[in-house]
Length: 400
Image (cartoon, rainbow, N blue to C red):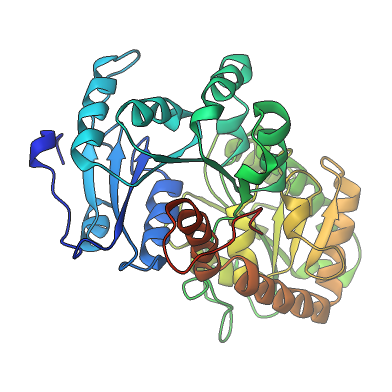
């Protein structure tokens, strides 16, 4: 959709009761924008809030779905590099829409806070969704500190980001809420029968135990440590380890290295690295154990999806992983780069299938209670209601 003249902007009729929230995003082509924002809009009460999305760039993958939910989408067509005129265009759009609240996300959305203030938007919320977008060096930290007085409320997806906003950015604790990403527990559900026949011929056989991971394959994700732990296990004499299979979903520069490690060890037939896939829910249901070996992590959406699928999780004890995985209850935490300990944790689940079943069931229950779409929407609603004074009144503090 091309940029519209502000005077041409229109929103669905709402009877004058619903408050307008304008969400500023870089584009609608990222997982956060496509899934997180759309799912939030789907689960917020339409009689209380209506929504518009302002995109800095017009890359997009879910405009149609957004419009089906009555969402106006405006593209500012920001140019490459410095494009000061896009601030003028944003100012005009916000003046035309006259939102009750502007909600920005990550570093790319920060300048919109100043534009919104100049445009007379009374209420302003800013969310940080990941370490990579938050910890952008000294200039980004200075910009956040300068804009901090303009922001009425901050949202962080993890305790680590919440602490960073308070200690490094200078946000008052009472103005910061921790709200985890939500997961669609209907789409991501445990398998209801035998494992799906995924992968190349011979990869899935009766009795196999599939260890899997989903995510971009780069150095910070540290997939090579998982491959090395897998190779150690299948080389051991324990009979249960002969059931092991490895499924790594995703693409990136480390994928070739992982494939080379498997080929050199003669284990390529026991592993499948299919690259990027659209059928993540089905592939998760083919797994028996989910492993995340990243060196740094916020609230991992992949871990939450795996837990919703009913999988136990073995993860590196870093960042938000320690908030999601409860050792001995829903999974096991290991130090990053600790190949021996990682192999031992995987071996426990492979040798004791009932342990995997028990921890996986608890993991799904935890997601339903704390990280479902309704739970996420409830927490955002608490922030919006407290700022706008909408009914019912909700006491705002640190949302958990």
